[in-house]
Length: 307
Image (cartoon, rainbow, N blue to C red; front, side, top):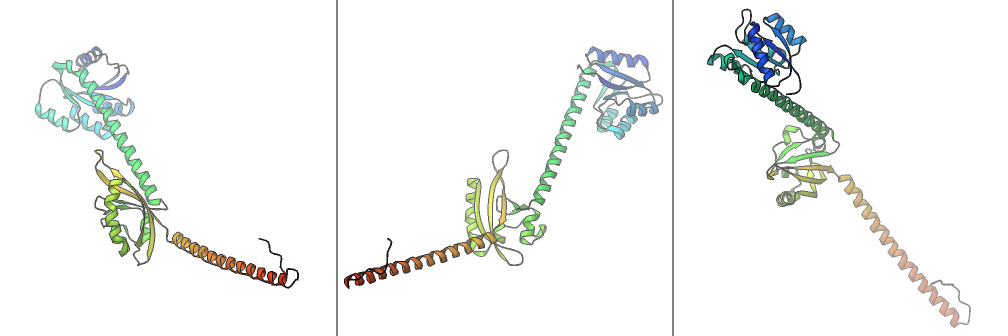
């Protein structure tokens, strides 16, 4: 290890401490050291020296390793802790490991200390990375939840059977339901009667295709019917197995009503245009007949017709 690490040593025998320091140096581990042998100095060192690793004897005249471990846990549980003792005691070893010690080493077998330090520090880094990943995941989920709930458009997730897993606030506002009234219910329960069978037929196809764009007539809690447009995608598990659908839902009732009104207006204009053209054609034919009679009588044509 090239980086120098701060190690707090809890030991009352100078010669034993020096043997430990020698063993650490022999393993090419660079370190800064601080030696204490009582509770007060230990607690002070935890706060001021800020050790990256603690190596503690188990038995001291004014202190003991188990108390040192528990105090460390109160201040910073993440600091690796290695207990060193002069004799084997399985009960103490088990108790210390349960309390969070990273290792338990016999003074007569210090040759294992170097690898124990490396393993303890690596384990600490792994824990830090795991905690960071979990924190980032939690923050990401919180951001997604905020966007999900505050989105101005309805979102919903359905399971493999078409039951509702989750909806956002916009969805609930559109339909007038509470969250508890919706979760776990089959999506077809919210469709107009004529569209229930259509959904039943289309959902298996949707799961095969992986995406869908469709329109359904739906019924709000107060009985009002509406037209909803859907865009959906399939979510899969890591092994590719179906997980759930993710759908965007939008109330397009007013849009559809506007489209229908526009279509009717266009149809009316087309009928009016047809009537106008027919009448114009009849007027031209009538004027041609008048001109023909005037010419037959030897007079000038009354109307000038532009073809």
